[in-house]
Length: 383
Image (cartoon, rainbow, N blue to C red; front, side):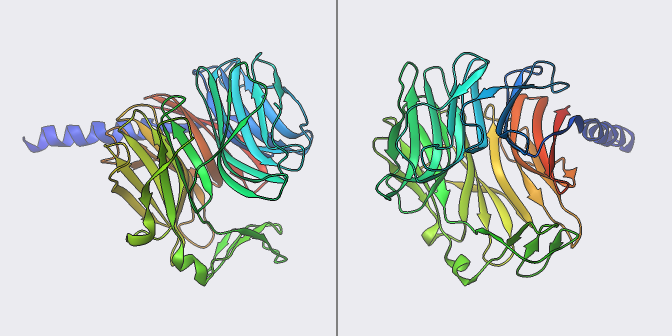
């Protein structure tokens, strides 16, 4: 290949990367809007929290140019963190709940989100939700009415009025889940660092060896010596969550951390993001091609924290979170692959944190970014 042809190939490759970008399509759509799911390029739902309504679910039919507020039962009693729609009228939102008002709501008519009958949780944290044609699921941990600490998933089938509790039978807390159908799926979990209130007032986002401070008396991330013993777990079920098999425990591996988002596209191929905070915060991406029996590391980068990984097929996927490359700068960490994770290209967004992403197709994706002005924007990616 002569230099002229090689130069043209490099030029067109760079041109494709330049043309692949994020566009802001909705500004200040809410205070904290981490949940997102777009059914197609025009129709989508967002979930989170606003000062006006408390918990909030929004719907758009024009790609985020305008939003309609959904009718949410007990909207002032819980904060939604995750959202998944099977279609425009059937889906589930999960988040943080309190006594009598667990952080779960479901939709079956396109407009009204209701809280089905559930066990009386004292406290619940559901970080992930999933909907298929007949089953709604949310994943996390909770305390029941007898103060028993449980972890796993809550499941409700279409036509039922009450969630079923499915303990994932592992030592650590369940965090995120991915099911291929109503019976076959995975949950990833582990221990994590708490975000603790701090009296320190900061005017900027700063990174020091032991703290990450968020401005305006926000939150402080404070690792301690116990983090050197962090562990993560992944478990698999083939019967809808009645029985579980541990397929990945990090205790005897070089990876010392916990797991966040997990995504399977079929019974064999899946990805999970791992977070290590023992020394320097770093993110990993692991992949399996045999249903979780073996896992291989695909990605590692320091000063990055991934919340989610999502794939739509064996090749196309995204991992999102945030990064803080130096003392005063942070951005949404957005990494894309088109070859199953052999290569990950970054398309970051400055000054926001990304909690989740909705992939419409191989060329289109949406995410919400939370900024330190305490508002969330909606972004669209096109290639």
